[in-house]
Length: 259
Image (cartoon, rainbow, N blue to C red; front, side, top):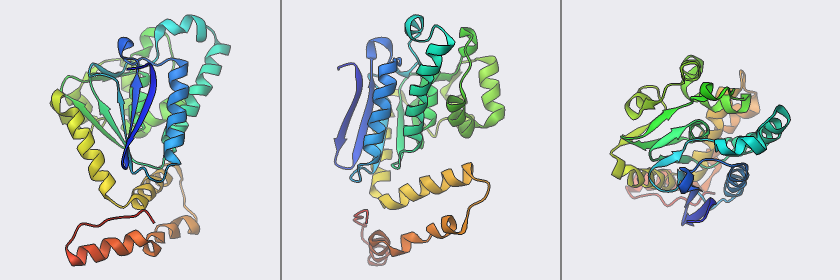
């Protein structure tokens, strides 16, 4: 498989692969750029109903940034700021993606890998998966844009403990902390992630996008104005609403159109 970010689409489900298997899918600045571009393009595609995000192979989702790149691209503050801008653009792009995202996690998911996985809406992993952010051992600090998705996921108390201790935790602990939604055997990860994506894709796509938006609004805004509150009732003027309730009454599966 070629190195980079590889995107494929099967009907209404897109798969985004972080492909750098020989380095356990460690990020380079080019990988960061490609990942952000991929999500921006997919978010604008109204045929998409769900995105599966994964690393190539089954050894790792990603261990984060490639440390060997630091000497040339993050060796001082000026370089780090430029690199950080690229990371922020990608984090913002994934966070703003309108479609539901399922993270398919095999093996290692630490550092920047965990940051990216934190941006998914549902996370599936195997029993051998490991998680953590041990950057204290590198003398590194997470920037605000990197911290935000982690804190939203586990809360400030757990985030502080993870960063201050730098421990690597197993999949069972990750479930207890709310990092992982579905824990399965290693050989069931791909199947479960795809089943999850198909289940999401069967629902009304407009509703999925609205729910993502509304939850984000609640988390990010202390108070919502009248227009924002009324948007929660826009669904009643959609074809999908009429399809949904009529299908329920007729006891048949709905065929949503996204309109």
